[in-house]
Image 1: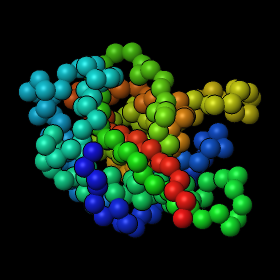
Image 2 (image 1 turned 135 degrees about the horizontal axis):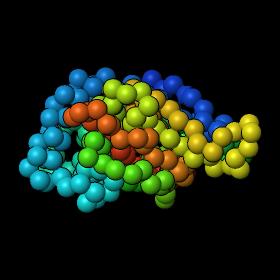
Image 3 (image 1 turned 180 degrees about the vertical axis):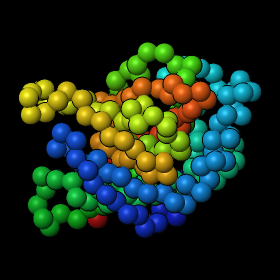
Length: 216
């Protein structure tokens, strides 16, 4: 992967909880202004046959090459998305509970970040399978476009604990276009129903961040 630039960009992080596990929502206005161009680029790859249905995963998925300049010469994902994702992950991990003494000095180091795109259309049938992103540490989804129907294209999480009357088996969040959700990679998740209205689309950009600690 080509290293993303400007990894010290400031981000605004809003925390929500699903099953008492924090999920983080982050606006990415620097990328949101390009959403129409991103949608057009993905449509062109589908129309040309470069992206084939269910070849790399559920829907029209790209390989994890969005951060490689030779695959995507546009700087959207290298310069506007990945640096914000990495910086946000580091801030989130700084607040993680670690069984270390208070005087231990360390920093979080990003070793790998991969990035790929997913387009869901009305041609899809069946449910997207539940999956996690292990062995990544934190994962993210940036939303380029969401279906008009509020019941479609949402983000579902499977309860990692036993289902009971107080906590259902599945939790669901309605993402927002131009925003990114970051969540622990071990959580099983999937999009809800694919778009069913005409040429409606759900377009997301997915990221996996692998982090280790580096002693100071």
